Image 1 (spheres, rainbow, N blue to C red):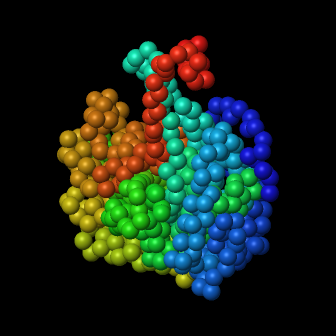
Image 2: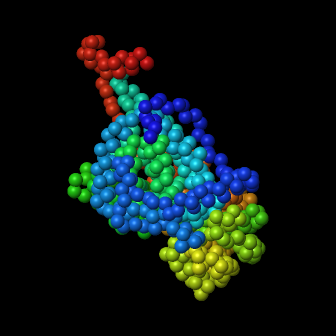
Image 3: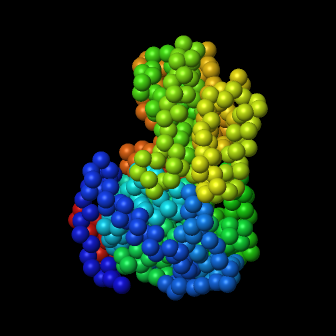
Length: 546
């Protein structure tokens, strides 16, 4: 393993986003097909625990299956116990002293090295995402691009904020310095819908800030995150800094949240689990000498408004992509479209026609637009909402997935109209390919409907009326508001991502404030005036010379 920390890292330069793969080029398509074959040849992948650099097997195993072909086992992971969590926390605390005192530039250098390794293996990681989480080619490619961006962006952000900041001088001979310091041990609990980008973003932010990390992946997608853990060690990360604990949420996840020596929990997932974590973390347990920090991202019930001045030719494909990309399994997905009366009939007709053209199929096929949902529980939940729509709403479109149901977790992409914004289809997060259409008499009512759920994650407006766009900026309650475009696909550095209300707590991922959540600020005030010149400290002399 290389030792990045022994070398002085090169200047990082300006942050630039990783460009997406151009699949219109034949060589890109051929390369990706080869990566799919290469990934599949390694199945089933054995995924051990990683504690203090040591790989540990367990008696209990958890299978990760291809959601499009559920008889195919992608990998078999170990399953961490509460005792394994205790072991990892002990090792993480031991490594914290050294890692937290490593210079920010050196910590950033590890992230840059990991980003370069990930760029070189981009198609292989994206192929794993296709086969383990059911993402279509472009969605999987974007997942890896975002992971690369997080590594590159947070490395530069840590260098930017990691230097001491000289504060105002109140008196001659007084020096005030503000510095940021790592918290300690951070527990990271990742989701399955962005199985690489989100765990990488959360863990990399904690690591580059000087914390040590225990990463628990989603039970459905342990393979891709385990490959990233290996890559981080290859990039020169000391073994005790990052520990990997796949396992049951109710066992190792619960112990991680409750452990008195874990300083912070970072979570992306359901509202129910997120609120439970907040409650558990608020309890100060025996031996705990700090208030545990929590950052959670908990989903949304996102709306897109189309008014009478909108370009319908642009609005309809944006709605369909936002609603049905990755089978609606993005926390940013459009699950409600609110149509003003003057365009209601036209847009509903166009949505119906557009939905018929959606290509349903296996994600490994390049033309597929709508694939499976993640597992049997998710499929059962979405089907219940489809049946609710059949019985209590007006179906506009219900796709035909009969060809695939016996092989994978496919549910029909569906569109329903409802008469009330209080209907369950318009209020409850479904997390699947179900779109609800609502009518509004004017823009006032459209905003009222958009803001009628307890969430505030993403939202959008299609309009060519400047006053409506201005009002949306002020009144539409969404952490990320998109005007005249899709409402998914936030890019690191351009659209820092995160919501409020019951969508989450914390500053925006991929933005300039995110790393401060993983740090504590300290101010040191020194009186430089002493009796006699001989007592001047080196720092005082430098201050006076400055």
